[in-house]
Length: 558
Image (tube, rainbow, N blue to C red; front, top):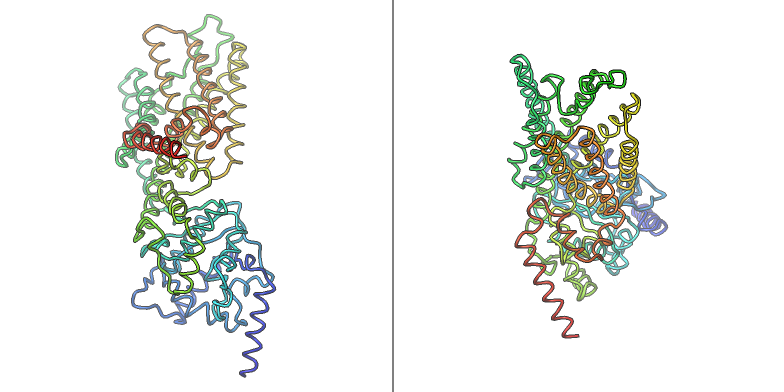
């Protein structure tokens, strides 16, 4: 029996030496299988949670417990290889490196990883599954740089950090070392987050109630024969702009509910509205007038799409709140520097600190960027010394939805409807075609961009959406006060929209690093990344001034 055990051990070592360390990976479906196996083991009593384990469906027993009572026994029976090679004996090329602290519940860990699994990723390397838990793992750790951790991280495309309720992963020296390698290799570091579907559904139920209330207001206004007013569309524009500027979570929630009410008030309150620009009464030539029913359909379509855009704004708010919560978990116990990180093995600690050497500040900076922005990329790490990148990684789809949704639909549809009825000016057709092409190019560029560039483009869209709202309010004022013709209003609106779109395309093509090279480039980036009036706050100005002074001192020293 002892001879057989030695043979099995030798074969396990041979397997792990024949398959490169960066191929000890699992797939998304392997993680789903692992969850099912752990649930089954809990039901059968094969896993006995400890006193400190939370056995709820949201968290589950800790990784330590699962490793001792499930992974080790299962892989022992299979031949002492790692769980990853037990599932995939030939190995899988590494795409994603998972950084975690082992203190989290297994269900919490699996839920966050699966929910945050990047679309372009097929496989993941995770130490608890990749390393052979029944073998002497120290034999694979001759030095930190040649360890399986380092080899897998170098081969990966991106690192995913999994926060937990107990303590920051960066209180552990091995996790800090992985952050050092990611920084040195120029990797993108993302924060894993759990699903917030329940919060989103609850928020959308509130939006649905607001829509019902708005529809009721519209019906009452119709029954009372209240005339159509331009105040409602103007207020809707102000609500959109305000939501993009304010920081307070409750105020943003109120703005979104108010916007939903206004949209459905417009949908139900009559058919005469500010998009009803081309009714037969407006033009002497009845044959070339757009039928009133067509403008009614366009009016309804616009406000229904706008109401959906307000729902997207509410989802953005919930996602931002969840991202802040995950970042706070990642801060727990972290003292601002990896020099305070601990390691259970003194020899490993000495080797890691010796290898990091004088790069502690750079690693601390990379972690600071991750905690502040919600993502750490080479571009963000480059500009973080001179730009306040707080929440820079939040994906806010509001601008994209408005610009690619109701605005795009109405701008293009109205022009081609007019063209169909033979009363559209050629200038309007040209501007409408440019508008459509610009939006398509922007959408394609956004889809192909890197993670941080995508977030940057989305934030740029939000800023130009604010400008577009101001432009629309100005046009409405000119129409009501100075009697500007409806043709000129629409033509000017198309022109403003096209200028905004071309500017967005320019920002997208330049990217974060390209804009940073421009005169006042860091100021421009500050405006783009910051939310509303925070773009030029005193803290930011002070930081930039101090940095400039430091740069001057450095120059004089040199």
